[in-house]
Amino acid sequence: MRLLLFVSLSGLGAAGALQAATWEGQGLRSALIDLCFVGDGLSNNPTRVQEIRALLPEFTRAVNVRFNDLGNCPAPTILANGNEDYGAGLRIRVSGSNITDPASGMIAGKGCQHAQVGSSFAMFPDEAEAHRSCVYNVQIWDDADSSGVHYRNHPLHEIGHALGLRHEHIRADAISSSACQDADFGGNFSDGYITPYDRFSVMNYYHPSCGISGNYGHQGLSALDVLGLRVLYPDAGNSARYFGKLVAREGEAIQVYGGWTWLGAAPNATRNINWWLDGTSQGQNSSYTWQLRPGAHTVALQYTDLVGKSFSSTFQVTVLTDEQYRRRVIAPIVSPLL
Image: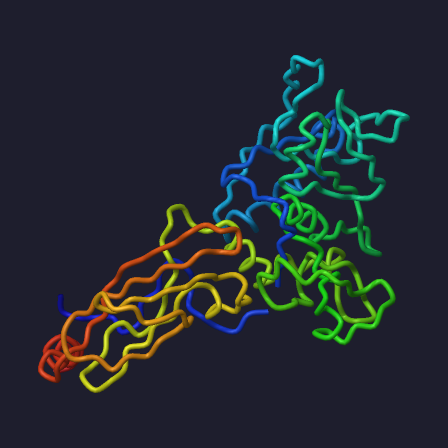
């Protein structure tokens, strides 16, 4: 090996300033999610269907979820009690679907006990699992701006709910973080924080007087929407995230960061963090700086996330003597210049 890197990163892009997300606490979906369009939506409103499909890569490029697009929703399974079971995937209703909800006030579907909603909406993961008898569990209407262009953020907002995200504007810290004083802005939800409050999140409602476009904007997922979903849907496996200066010259410090806080997440996103250096416990801080003797040293990191999943990684940090530094780093850089 001729050249050793001085910065190493597990999994994500380099740390930097980010712009938030809140978990509703009603479960998560699997990494592979069935998605279909109910009724006649696919044939009667293909433009809207294609708009929604075109937005799905905003999620799949950023986090560990994939959508299995089935096209038209398949027929339900009939249960022993006679109720219909449509499965737990995303069953999307768009305008033109020709789904007639019953006069009972419930969503269509034999056995469905979820109240009809006039506006766009989406069931949270656990909510959708509990209402498998409903014909649809996501409803995305044609909300558009003054030019008639459908809001980009509107479907993203509803799919965000379907993946487990709560409204951003009802957080207990929303007013203090944004100075927005609209009458319907703010709330008392203080649990489930994944990141700080984010005025750029698609999970806000539209508050133009406060400069918050929310679900009626066109900018797409914010950086902290993505971070929040990355925490909820991490990469496959159970490798802990770490970052830092993992190779140093003698006399320089080794610096390591673990979990999600170094990316801008709230402390709540990484729990029960523990570090070991060469088999000796180092404590529960999110980062450490060590002055170490030359040689290779073994670092172990463990933590749990806000839904209780455990992650661990073991990796090496290296301190080079001056001679090793000259031979492995300086010489390979200088020799092509001679």
